[in-house]
Amino acid sequence: MLDRRDFVRRLLIDRGDLLVVSGLGSATYDVAAAGDHPLNFYLWGAMGGTAMIGLGLALARPQNRVAVLTGDGDMLMGMGSLATIGVKQPNNLAIVVLDNAHYGETGMQPSHTFSGVDLVATALACRFKQARAVADIAEAAAVRALLHGGEGPILVSARIGDEDVPRVLPRRDGHAIKQRFVEALNSA
Amino acid sequence: MPTPSTTPISWPDAIYAQFRRAGVRQVGYVPDAGHSRLIRLCQDDPDIADVVLTTEEEGVGLVAGAALGGQRAALLMQSSGVGNCINMFSLLRNCGFGCLVLVTMRGEFGEFNQWQVPMGTITEEVLRLAGFLTYRVEHADAVDEVVGAGCDMAFGGDLPIAVLLSQRLIGPKQWTR
Image (cartoon, rainbow over all chains, first blue to last red; front, side, top):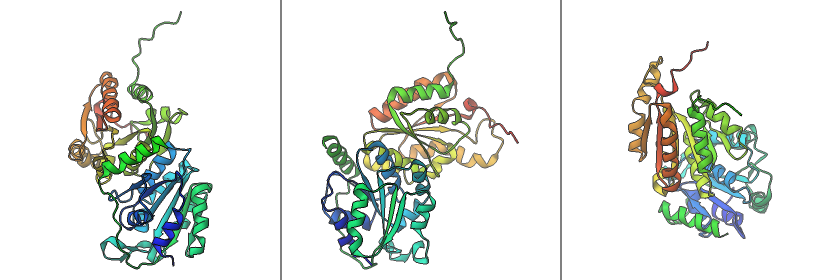
């Protein structure tokens, strides 16, 4: 089991111009805890849509790498988007599912992955170029390398612990998050 | 000297020409009979990424991601698909993303399948409740102007715009089998 904060911090270290989209709830808090950055697009809602935002961004910016960091609940709600991504085959898109097998925001009810529903196998069935599960912090560097240079589309299911961690809240004004992102990308 | 054509441009071609004019680079859609010609035009255009969706709400995320990356995206869907998008539309309002949705209407003029009626009759209201400005087109010769205005408002004004292409315009679904 991974410590989610330590794992995400290691993924985003020396990130350069990596574009990051974070799914609502704990994934957004984890990305914020790793260090606020103008090229973070934090979601506070739109559950199920995180991976598709990543796809639209990856298609628009083939010269950048795009990392979607989200939870198992968000990925399960948008499972069809894995098929959509599989059709388009964006080489520059990676999805990291921070999978604690629970719905953390709503009282830690078990999610479908708790019962063994396998997002890695789903991604491979959807023609992802690479998909793997990781559970050892020693693998963080390899996952980081995938985000920056792996042949996409990529999905990594990161088996994280289900312990409660303090919330780290980034800005919540969607207009401001968007505007800052667009301006940073334009000046990059 | 070529003979000038008297055949009016078809409405899907008019929409496609507006997409070209506005610089639309991504088009998300769930396959739809009414949009079939437009979908084919987009698929054949190397400057447009056509993205076939499993459900229409995926398209809302696509539009947002495209805009973050500096590209313009449009969505094609049937009226039933509008219902699939409702919560995801909150992304547009919360972040101020413009969005152009072209909706082929079912469940109205000439509909043979009553299962299309419940969603078809509330589609425009649902869009308005979700913050869209809606424009209904009944005649093919109005498509160019309305879609052109819709492109300008969605991409120039960052507004959520829906153009409803009426079933009378599209023609009733052809039951081929």
